[in-house]
Length: 481
Image 1 (tube, rainbow, N blue to C red):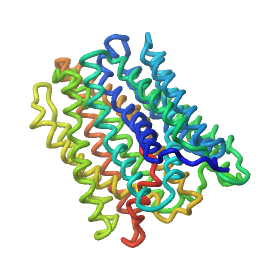
Image 2 (image 1 turned 60 degrees about the horizontal axis):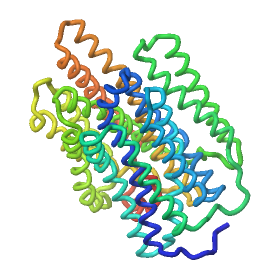
Image 3 (image 1 turned 90 degrees about the vertical axis):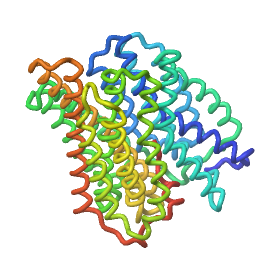
Image 4 (image 1 turned 180 degrees about the vertical axis):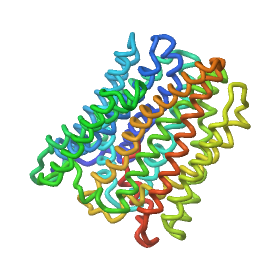
């Protein structure tokens, strides 16, 4: 059923939705810059520091599919308002947190409400701009916000942390939420999916607990990959995910129709997205630590230093968008991960007394070029050939894979970092050099993961140039964030 009231001004609706999109995207990076200061003030352990990021991306990724379904069935404007309000309250709680446990809980609730907010925003955008040139323009704006939000988060996080407090990296969301909430009340209209709709509760429970168990199991790997707890949680998670697949094959209205993921090309694209998420969220976090802890950069300078990769991505994407229909997806999906791996291998050469312009910047340029190749191609492949009624599930899966990959990557790379750092300290290496040894191990592991992504592309990615979605349609279906 759709609200018959006209949109007062659809361009103001776009402004409201774009602001919301910015908040969700930048929140993944704005806190990254603040982490060293937050760790020092709250006395966080390295594991707690990891979970400040993991709690957000894990809950966000695990609940994206359910959030999209709730928005469709319950009402997209209503879900948007509830998600926005809850996100603001969780941000305020995190901004006044007095210990690591409170901060991690707040981040988890941010992820929960973001999982309701993000798909509702995209669905509302689709309803507001149903067709024509305005639709293309609206989705282009939405896509640009999604692509640049990470850079905005890095810079804003640096400014707030350096000139105010790390707490404002969370509290600033309240300002955005108030503006967005008032704008949504006046300029968004309600809509929901037609017909009889039932939530797949069994699927939602099993996939959420399964992914949570897997990620928690990986987080315990710091204590040993062969420990009973590590093996137990990983096995439990795997079992629950198998049960999820069984449930999805039998229910009438599944959370994730299996036909979306069993396609060879789409399945390969989803696997590559998991790896990309692990590298983007899981390993590049350690570059921020290197900037601030080892090189002694201020939060603002560290934020600006991180932005180089995003700038390269934004510069290269328009070129690749024009090139993609001419050369097809397979070549870019193979070369992109390999170029990214080269950048990560280069980055593994960082030293305690190194120079940003010689040890880091060339690697960020390579990473930006490689990731741009992947982004342009992967989103297209993941959505090509999807039936219209499966488009929401497919686009949510793309983004869920990114977030879940990030949460798994954070856990795995934290274990790798801790092992390398402790080994260096045991060998009598100075503390800052021990840190860089740990960071180097993470970057080498990330490079290996990207090589695996290239191999997946070799064996899974096919497709004619004519099968690719038009870029405007691609942007319309992808949940950025």
